Amino acid sequence: MIIEGLLTTTDEHGGPHVAPMGPVVDAELTTWTLRPFASSTTYRLLRANPHCVFHVVDDVVPIVESALDMATSLSFAAYSANVEGELEETRVAVWTIPTACHWYHLEVTAWDVSQERSQATARVLEQRVLRPFWGWNRAKHAVLEATILATRLHLADRKSIDEDLARLESAVTKTAGPRELLAWRLLHDFFASH
Image (tube, rainbow, N blue to C red; front, side):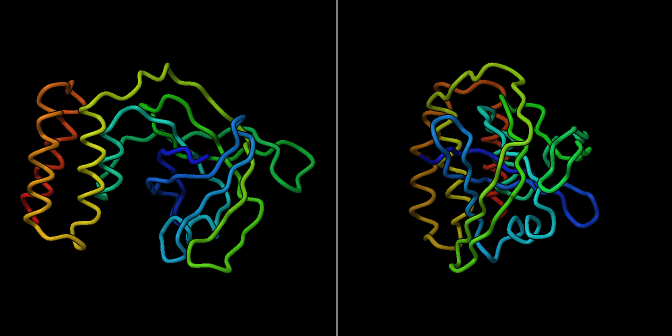
């Protein structure tokens, strides 16, 4: 099955990179296959550093921020991990999203780069539960759909995007809380500037 969330990686300067990711996992979340496109920043960073963190989120703000290439509130911490090939635990520094429900520190152990969409096999080094998963309501789904539209703005005509946004806004107006309203404003500003 595919689990949707956000993946943090570390760039060559130690800074964070956040991107939406839908890895293929088993029901126990022990087998992970990341599938970044070979042309993506995530692919380049994972090839240079095999450590990343996958976040399960129900907060739409970091999803919108990452999709629109905006700064996302992150934490930086080092964790002890049994790194592949090492006999003793090693301290590994990773970026995490503090508003996530839970996260999985992954280490890529193998690559298949024979296709445009690569496949990176990863293992779980550490996992943390930060808070309960509250779930998704209509406003969260609407924000997610609008975020997808924002990433495909260059592929669709503006009239159909505006129609979709008007339809989605109704769900936001009826069921949004403060975080969904903030995310919707970020999207509204993005669409207004493009």
